[in-house]
Amino acid sequence: MTNKEVNTCGSIAVPSSILVVEDDEGLNLLVKKYLRRAGYKVRVASNGREAIERITANTDTLLLLDYKLPDMTSKVLIETLDKKGLKPPFIIMTGHGDEHTAVTMMKLGARDYLVKECNFLDFLPRVVEHVLKDLAIEEKLARTVKALRESEERYRLLAENLTDIIWAVDLDLKHTYISQSVMHMLGYSYEEALDMSIFDILPHPYLDKVMGAFNEILAEKETARNGRFIQKNLEIEHRCKDGSNIPVELNLCFLRGHDGDPIGILGVSRDITERKMLQEQLIHTATHDHLTELPNRRLFFDRLSITEARAKKEKRKGEGKFGLMMLDIDNFKRINDTMGHGIADVLLKSVADRLTGILGEANTVARVGGDEFMILLNETGVEGDLEAIARKIVDEIRKPLTIDGQKLNVTISIGIVHFPTHGEDIGTLTKNADIAMYSAKNSGRDCYRFFDPNYE
Image: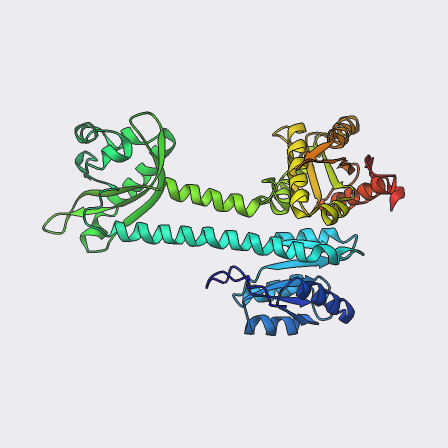
């Protein structure tokens, strides 16, 4: 079989091979077999030292890491690579019941994690595929941003620079010049803009920031007189004639007279709306599932960490509660295998839509795995409230679904925990939610269960 060419350009963002770091020789062979069958180029390392040598020799690699290695943990391995300036993307593998370790590694930058259960090899190629797709999307967007910035730089060097607003003020901060491009960017005529103060086009939150920059420049007149180039760069907003605001990059420096003495300040205001949009798109791509558009595992655990910290602080006042649910679509693998990926993907999006339709914006619904979702219920730590929500979810998901003319009867199993009754840290809460979810599955599926210590 021909190995998949997953490196789409010269950047290191998308690896061309996979390095499996696992000391279990039998598992190594199985993982290699499953990934090669899926078309990937695979190498193996049995310990951390060997892995570091291989990565140093070939940085174009996606790592599939067992957390516990004979000579070091994966955490130490990643930190060692980081000190060498190497930051390969990686997926972590942990044993069942060790999910808190996976959370720790996610905070270190893991792209995903797998729990080594009986059927985890079936999901492995798909997890790898999703990670590589996400890397490819991020790489493409990064290239776009880089190209945009290079383009901006080229045009900035042009003397005419008709798209930027070029303006000048004297040492009393009165306008002495403003370019005609003010009409295109802000909607003011040349005459209107020249009669305005620079502060007339600054939204109030930015007045102090710009005035501070002006004062810093004016305070350094002697330095400028001695020949040093003084420049200030700010990201602020300008107010348009129609009342809207646009983001701009503002560059400020001294204007000098013929004798070299400072006579004013030169400003260049550049519209960075497109750059901001691309930055937001990059952030969205890095924090959301590309299929369902729900928050992904990384964003979910970031929000969970914030909620946990707030709840612990409020717990001292007798407050601070939140709920956590772990959901798994029943018999999803059978649907995927018998009806195909296309219908399975539509099913996942339908479940995501139904979940977001039930829960308000104050709560977070995330897709954290193949057919696994998690819900963070802020300020909902009362068992009765959580039960009502879970019952509503089970009833909603149970409603028949028609995809491409085929009727599907879908059900879901839910595990529920709440802070602080079922745990006071993320690792304990997620582990107990997972235990409760499997209890729901063992009880016949299509139901929910709260965590009970007797399950362990």
